[in-house]
Length: 561
Image (cartoon, rainbow, N blue to C red; front, side, top):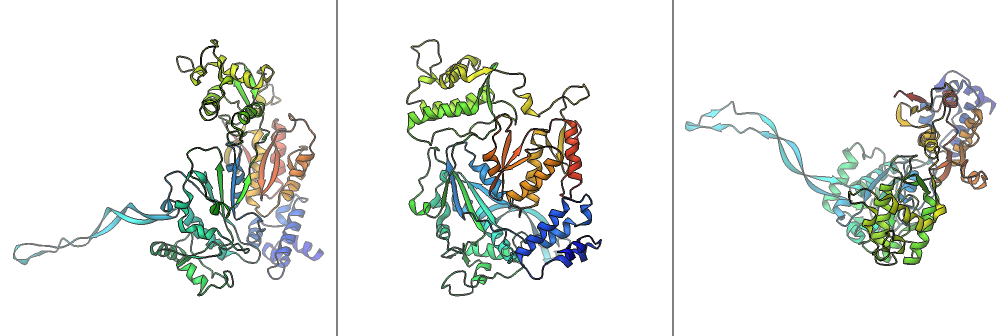
């Protein structure tokens, strides 16, 4: 250990790193070594002498913790529960290819097909023969002309399939990078028609590979073979080691995959999807297809965003409304499918209230049209005329502006008079940018910030975006490791609740106002990042200074308005 630390303090970077690298490809030692280097770098302001990030990345870029997640998984639940967001938080670290199913989706729009495209084609000039057999030699050469040609266009599945095999070929004992294919709204398309014979590939073995390879058609074979040989994004530069991967396979499995003769899903190919159980006009999914997926229910829950519905000079807490209206939906439909998720309706901009026009057009329209119209419409009775039948147009004036009074009546029908209160002068300004007095008597500080020269971020979001960036740059770290690292920075600048693990969050006894946190995902695990405490210019300067002492590749700068 002491010899290793002595080497770390040497000034010859290449010699230093090479000297402390473990012999062979022991991934556990690699991770331990990296932890040591990162640990000591936190305690020395001259950490740039301890290690060089480029060299470390080169030494450890193959290190990839195995992700123990389902290979095929469908997130399902009521609309607005955050299904897509949860998938995105997990998959964005590794990269994902996304597609959305719809009623017109088919095999060719999912896998690929020949399509007409405009392309410059080289044309040969044919010499002209005139009377007497004289040839005009000037009519020679070539020229380019745009013509319609047919070209095979890859779609989401084929792109993900090729990328997965490329990543598999480049992996080693220390890890193989996963490839995600994300399908939004999977039940809005005819899955049997879209997947076709690919359905057979969804049956996976314990090792993660498809149990039964299928034969590709001639067009697909040519495209796959060409991509693996010549296309930069998919070219296989290393041999595929597939010995014993598929039991009783007759032939050379690796060569058959490279030539496109057969299709086989590798163990690093993850297919995840979302499903809104409330959607109408959907295609049924048969039981055989369902059995090949893991199903994850996303429950309706308070996301702690503190959204408010603004109606005139009053506000109604969004989560209070969601809970109350969902009870009425359950009474009406005896089902969870039609209930509202927390993210069913969001403010136009982060930190603002949900405007009344947005509330009417998204929420009330859905409730009226999809839930209550043909049932109990009592809560929609907002007219002064008790004999008048409830109707959606009661929420609009003759000039098509929103009838604030009638919207208020509806809210009272749902949450009661006590569910509304007058707007406080601090209701939204505090949340919008967390702008407070700058200390110079000039009023509010509305400064926005860039991370590594990119973005336009408010103080309230600065820690969230910084930690997201840190996770992207350090994909092998667990949520606990990330939290421990950032808590050290938080303690240095006196921000106690900069980040919490799920365990910290569960044990946090602060009241809701003090617990302004945003959930992010790190390697499939939740982290809760504080969104307040950054209001003063002094605090932001402390954060800048703390980051500058760490060789994390992160910096923040003011944006000049």
